[in-house]
Length: 85
Image 1 (cartoon, rainbow, N blue to C red):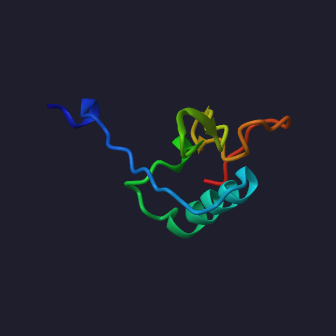
Image 2 (tube, helix red, strand yellow):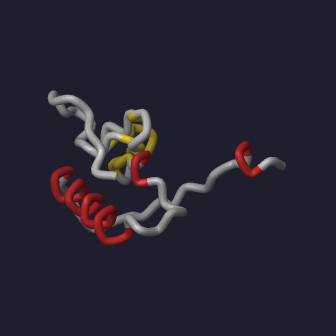
């Protein structure tokens, strides 16, 4: 199979957190500390309640920006998209 068309795997990482704000903070901390790991696509990060995993909340906008990568602002931002990289 062509690597460009290969199926990707998802890591589901349960937490003991009970607040959406707290789990967003954790996701942001993981992105900061592990951002150098090219195998992780943080732009696709979603969150869900333990018993409602089919209802997902996107963390970052992730719009593709020509020549600079993806938008790294929160999903519901109102300012123009931007990327740090």
